[in-house]
Amino acid sequence: MRCATLLILLTFTMTAGAQDWPRFRGPNGSGLGKADLPAQWTAANRKWSVKLPGTGHGSPVVWADKLFLLGGDEATGRRTAACFSTKDGRRLWQRDFEALAGKQHRLNSAASSTPAVDADRAYFTWGTAQKLTVIAFTHDGKTAWEADLGPVKRQHGFGSSPILHDDLVILSNDQESDGHLFALDRATGKVRWKLPRAENHSNYATPCLYTPPGGKPQVVVVSWRLGATGVDVATGKQLWQMPLFAPKQERAIGSPSTAGEYLIVNCAFTGGPKHVVVLKPGNEPGTMREAWRIEKTVPHIPSPIIVGDRAYLWSDQGIVTCAKLATGEVVWSERVEGEFLGSPVCTGDKLFAVDKGGKVFAVAVGDKFQLLGANPLNELCQSTPAIAGGRMFIRTWSQLHCVGAD
Image (tube, rainbow, N blue to C red):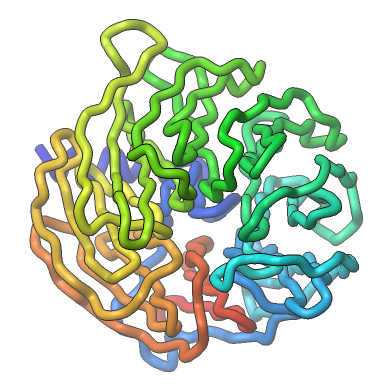
């Protein structure tokens, strides 16, 4: 029964964009991709590596044979939108934008945002104290439109990433004051709706789309103080909100994801309260209820991932936990060496995650813990890999790497 459930969920998740990775953590933020990758790499598996125009922690996105990535200059604040060939790493175009450097957390960067991409355009964003910029480029590098969403008021700097739904670009900007959830027209960049957020604190979680059984699509955004919020993606109307986390004014960084009726969210703080919570529809139409939670050795910065009927939690300290999605029962919890600031991804029966030192670990999916491989890239890495076209793409601080089967 469990194998059948796993096959159905994996097939459903990979149907939309089996060869593409259109946003942070891939299709709807699931972290699930399709590639036949070995756990331990040889020289033949390392297809290419290229130097990037700028540095940063944002992840790559992929559409067909093009990869899009944001770079930054920490000294000047200059941002660089760039496009690469997935075949050989050749840089196809880059566009540079002058911006002012600003105060940010030591773990942040000038390019911590991940773009989003569709068949027509790639959508980049970055924020400064002067303005929140969103720019859409055609696949050949021409500017389609540019939007200014107002000043960014964040103590630790900007790092939010856009997502796409139908004809909308959706971006969450929880900040110290005047925060909003924005929906822009994909074709023009005009604001279609914006929802004021009463958070008044910075959060960095990327939203996901959630459609409850028999319901309509919602965008789910997560923050520490407000918890999880469901918003009608067509109108911007708030549908429900559940405060889920301890009354401490910190930041949500890990991003939510869904599988079937389940919605998983996390929020944690170093040395403080830690929460992973799974929600499902409530008994009353339009409501949600808590199915279970785990509050020990759970991730602060990395996002949870759902594979079949199991949830996997890869903590910042390298503790990996496998739990039953329906009940939260812990199947196993084991430590992998390293410090992790990106999120795990999955392809086939393997989870991959990159530690801060640039070592890519592979762990088996299943009811028994197995460390399958460890592959050094030997550079700072705080980003999440992308999986598309049968390959994995990993952004380290100043380089882009491609890994594939022999």
